[in-house]
Length: 143
Image (cartoon, rainbow, N blue to C red; front, side):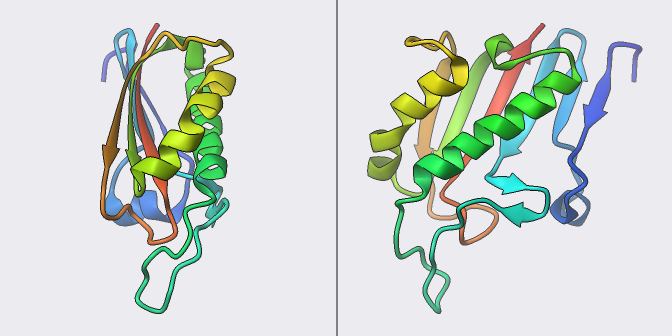
């Protein structure tokens, strides 16, 4: 690593289990791994699932999305950056309609402006790392 390279993690069990860090800075670019709704090792607003592990209600999508942005802001702060430095985000969601109903207000609040200046892609996916997760967001920021 050069003197401008840095990595950051939260120290949650799945980082070691999967073998990755939460964020990497290379030069003036910061790459964040997909952020999920957790506070330490505890999932935030986990979706209810049935005996087969299938989500039965997507109502917690907004709360989970807010936590994803909060975790990203914490990581970016470790690099002296903020969500204002984000240039691209990719939002992975379990239910496009549920995400569409909440993403606009949650994103505007997270970025602190009515027109977030960030390239954004939303992708529907059948599953995320844990069955109770409804959303995951990957970020790229430039200093």
